[in-house]
Image (tube, rainbow, N blue to C red; front, side):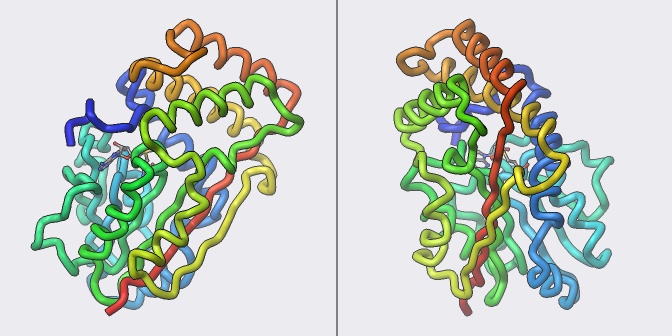
Length: 282
Ligand SMILES: C[S@@+](CC[C@H](N)C(=O)[O-])C[C@H]1O[C@@H](n2cnc3c(N)ncnc32)[C@H](O)[C@@H]1O
């Protein structure tokens, strides 16, 4: 898929901003939220196998894969795929068994990758997929898994982004975001349907686990920083796709981002994440 025809809007703004935000949210939000990179039963499954193989789809910078490498035996293979290879960490900074390459989650993977992986991981595709594409991705993941291999999907979404007490600016942002998502064909309820979508695709032993930043001490300041980064990037991206009523220019985007930051001085923000996992039958 050409990047320009994708619904993914977070590449807008400066080239390094996306990499910085992805690394920041990995270190300061998603890893502290779950306290680990994968659920214990999946880690045990990987560690018990000789030459375990892991794929990370829509890998971004490849940071999750790089960190997982240190928890697996040195004969493990860790392959990262993204349709935008410009974000990848430099090869020389990666462990020798981590490889990053092009891969589009919406296209069938080549047949030599079929049945190759013990774990396929995805995280944060809420901005990347249209409502009807989640099932297609699940279908493509199934082709990559060995029989008995795991899918693990970490996702956030608008239903998990809140401010306490209510922030008028943040609510305005969510309203604009959801109208923009509708315009682009994305599902505004992500990730509330994900467990069912994974089950419907044919995975078995499926389950989920929910995390909230507000229940982890020490994340408050990081949450505010993240809100600034995400609102700045997503509003810019939306404007570049034509925008929605009330959000058509970069000036309007900057004004709203500033208003959100002002509101945050007297409020607490929450971001949630859900892990969904399922076993490829076989
Ligand atoms: C929010 S980032 C998450 C990156 C990484 N999974 C993480 O958690 O840090 C979403 C990623 O999806 C990638 N992406 C979007 N559409 C894609 C597609 N159709 N195929 C592969 N990657 C895609 C983007 O390039 C971006 O790196």
